[in-house]
Amino acid sequence: MSVSAMDAAMPTAAAASSGVEVGALDPDLLQLPDLASLPCKPLSVRMRLEDLFSQWLSLPETQRLVFSLLEDAKAGLALPVPAGAGNGTPGSPVSLLPGMFPSGSTPPLSPRSSSSSPHSPKSPMRRLGSGASSLGSPLKKASEPVKEIIPQFYFPNGPPPSREVSEECMTRIDQLFSAHPEGLLPLSAFVPVTREICKLPSFFSSCLFRKIDVNNRGFVTRDEFISYWLKENMLTTDNATRVFSVLKQADKTYLTQDDFRPILRELLMTHRGLEFLHDTPEFQERYAETVIYRIFYHVNRSGNGRLQLRELKRSNLIAALQQVDEEEDINKVLKYFSYEHFYVIYCKFWELDSDHDFFIDKDDLIRYGNHALTYRIVERIFSQVPRKFTSTVEGKMGYEDFVWFILSEEDKSSEPSLEYWFKCVDLDCDGVITPNEMQYFYEEQLHRMECMAQEPVLFEDIVCQMADMICPKKQGQVKLHDLKRCKLSGNFFNILFNLNKFVAFETRDPFLIRQEREDPSLTEWDRFARQEYIRLSMEEDGEDASNGSAEVWDDSLEAPY
Image (cartoon, rainbow, N blue to C red; front, side):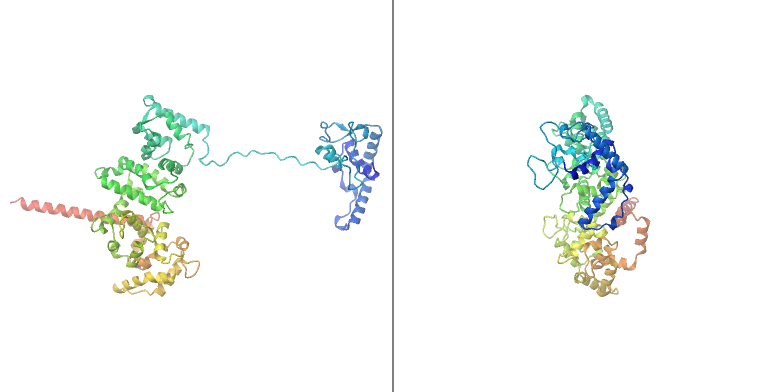
């Protein structure tokens, strides 16, 4: 072994022999100068390293270590190394002398040149394995990373139920099914299962029952229910997913209008607030259709007639379903199910349908709201730009198309309404409403004001007012997102094609302002439907009273004679 290699090995081995690690020595004993003063040239660095080594050897502790190591080497004693060095067991002594190596092997040669024999490893690392890296080195080998098992945190069908929840559910299932002979549950007794276990509205019981009773036997067994409800992991899913899974067809990934008809038929038969319709099947059907059209108007934001699960989760339909199941007064459920709202929509349609063929043409629609709309906006509606008609008669609007129209006309604060009217006013369908397009619709409004002997408001003045109202991001270009973030966007469209509402906005009708302040939670549609229902009720009561008084008058005339 060369002198330089021996000198380099002695302090390390001495430290190992005495049980003192090199890294544990106090660096202040070396009297090191400031590193910032060291030159950066390679020769100076090497000289400095030699000075440091000389200072280290001159320390008393280092000298004792070196002499102790030499004495042990002369005596042929084994040199202890840290645990893990070599191939031996932890803490076993390993000698660096030739006689202490296993037979048939040679100690590593000191690296004198870049070339080496294939039989001579370049470093002790290759000779002794990975464990020899700790021999005479203060650096510790980095431990292997521990593979941590991450528990599953995403469950597409919902997380599995806890043991307590499963046991509680199974106990309740056993109670409900054991109360019937042989555990066979008929449809008439399935409502408690629907409400208590499945957490669904009671009028879902028939639909859920038929989902399980695929063979139409008229009853459901305990095992069949468990197989459908628990094995499908429906116990821990959210309410929207449960409703979606129960209503949709097995081969579909979306809901259609027909999927809602079974639950609405059961609602009409079981809800106390709709019992008066049992003798009028025709109006039962119209009520169910109206509810379905309103649901798809608000919930099916894509407008393709295919209601997706994500649309259902973003809507308030689930809360409305639970409310209508708990509320005896159907008219208190303003979302979708109010009978008064249906009554207003149907009567409005019936008033416009002069020939009662259940279709409306342009001449019929122009009479809506006491001729409130302009001819130009009616033309755009019948061009089917905002929405393609479902009517099979060309040039005529069906009942479903009218529901979309009246919901959009009477509540221009909702997103479906803004999208409906934006498409009407956007003549070139480029997604931007320009002043030229505004002027096209406002010209007819201006002419109507002149005919009604009202002071006309010039377009130059009104366009500035609309710009201040909407505050579009780009001057002269009104986009849909500009209207959606503005609370007065409904007035923007009223100015263009609804003269009655435009005048009411300009005069700031105190009655409308008081209505809004009384209950700010009500939408524009809710206020309109309430006012119209009162008017229609009074008209109907007046007709009944006039007919009744005529009959009384006739009887009084005939009685004395």
